[in-house]
Image (cartoon, rainbow, N blue to C red; front, side):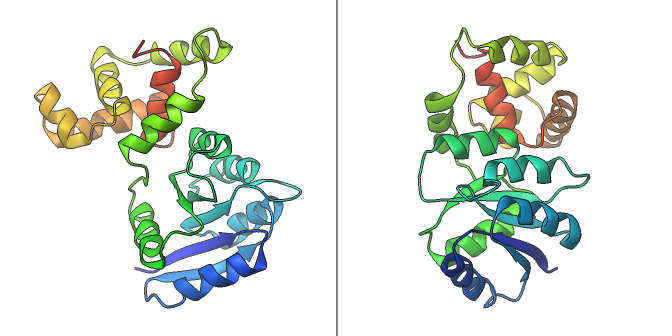
Length: 218
């Protein structure tokens, strides 16, 4: 199956370099390019890519606003953030909005291709260690109004769904969570899917952020 991909970056040279890398693959088709967030939103709607490589800092509409708008579409593509920073508040906000991960612009070509394939297949691209570092750096403090809202959302969950969320927020895989809760991995997947639907979230990274914002680990 060919992965339809949209490239978004305000630097022509960056887009050219990425397209050159991706054109060498048999299973990734660069269906379009955009040089700012406004173009990205329009292109995503018109071209229906499965993955968007999204720069963060761009003129007019930045990558964060574009990510939010794209992920608000019905059946949205996966969004991967392109950045020059390992840990950055823009990256955290994009992940909070539902992005599936981030890539540094100096990532080796082979890793870029592998990451795109993984995200298209439904995986997220953040290791638990990176997730924890981002959360520790940028999650809302205890007295922040977001904490009250996050706790209100958690009240929607059953006790078992809350147990699963607690483990997911600590970075456990489905297999590890299943072992901890004496369940099958398939059952954990069902709970994760149900939990994300109830919370109105796109992926596990968003769930981990919500769990920390709600003070589940204080």
